[in-house]
Length: 136
Image (cartoon, rainbow, N blue to C red):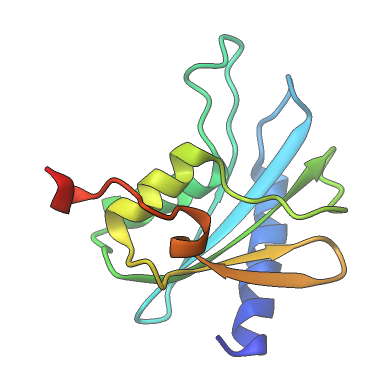
């Protein structure tokens, strides 16, 4: 991935933090999902008082994109932190990794940002030996 592409995704993910509804954890997360044809879909985490219906930023971005007819993705940037302060990498949770596996190949790139540095990993690195539709 080109550095400017990673930086654009990080910027979009940081901007998405402002849409986070996280009154219980105060941990804001933003995500920016890049389609193979260059469109960006963003998401922010949305919490619920009963916690179970809470949804992560990554899944908001994916589900919005899929709802819009997209199914070909190349990368996602994920940022987050307490009160929206980005000071550590914020990798996707296991549920989000599984959703990514539904729509993406193992070489799909995940861009993380700690406020100073970026780290790019593949979905295959984040979720090796994943359960996919080929297992069914």
